[in-house]
Image 1: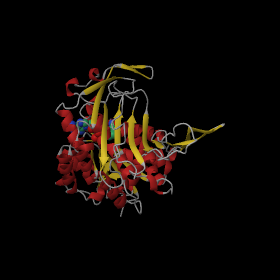
Image 2: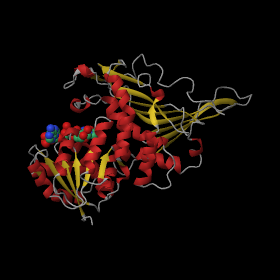
Image 3: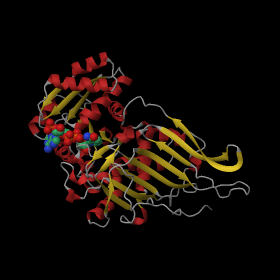
Image 4: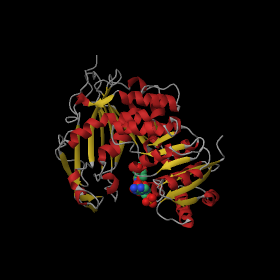
Length: 469
Ligand code: NDP
């Protein structure tokens, strides 16, 4: 049985993720659910004194909105261990201090995580140990499979929490209520009615000192391969009869298994680009290639677009376009579902009907629906009307949502091993085509929308799917 104090042991506690996302996320969890008792154990090679660790924790919990008594109690329980977790002796010492059902959180570069998992295999471990791993899970389908096999030698699948914080985003979860708790959307959520789906995550943020990680990944691997494909799975999946970790994740994998690069052509179905110097929000941004820590010869993409098809009866022929980039002209994070035009507009109505379009903004959270109405004061003339609803602030940040589930031993919001492998299976041919130089690395000036050569979006033009029956 789980102890009433939940232990969270963070390997790599000196790093960026811990400080910027994980601990403040915990703060939002403890603000929303102050009855939870958590012992936070930081582990890193960097010497951090107990007082400094406690001060870091207190600041992060405060940032997350936890109350003073909760912060005080959590900080009093916290401790820090200086250890190199890749050293068997050090790791054994850390593991020996873990309680049953402790969460071991790998806030580490992925290659370090792999090493530590191998060491864990040969060690005595606490009962009910839970492993929380950050993306990327592997670097292609094969390495993801090998990592999954290795993890399963340490703990069972339901105790492996592959974290993708997009699954903790309230708007992504809102997709479930929106799709399945309304009479009017689900019947038209298919290729007969939908012309195109776009999942976009454009950021004004440039590299911001993350070259060490980002230059080896790029937009395709950092964003599309993990986050945006999981959003696609939520948009495209069949209807669950209940929301639990078995059914939701079964259906997400079902959708991912049907997903592939359009026309099996990774060259025609993908585009990549890298930003040159420019101005974003009035601030000068240097060219990506000249940023500290970037190796320009690597040709890392900072903007990626991918055209996918979900090959099943519901979605056959509908283009799903995934796109994400850095240092762009505006932040634009949304799922857009564009519907086919009506088959017939009565004679006598003037003007073109605008296509119905549903947009779910991920940040800030908002749903908008574009419809066609008669223009005010000009009764037989058509015009576009937009209905919009703000969804309000979520109770927790994504890392709070996800940590809460991990503490409860519920993998609902964690990526199952087969889903992680499927995501790589979808993008592996694109990565190979890019590495082989078959897709040019275009350029866009920081602060602009896209390279000049990308006038039309991928998959734009006449519908790729057959016309309505
Ligand atoms: P960092 O590069 O900041 O590394 C975290 C810590 O890992 C370091 O502080 C260091 O601690 C330890 N470390 C680094 N190299 C080694 C090594 N060779 N051997 C042992 N320990 C090492 O990573 P982040 O905190 O940015 O990210 C952690 C994980 O989270 C990564 O998998 C990343 O992909 C993922 N992630 C990060 C996000 C972010 O915004 N930062 C967002 C989403 C996911 P020390 O030297 O003190 O032991």
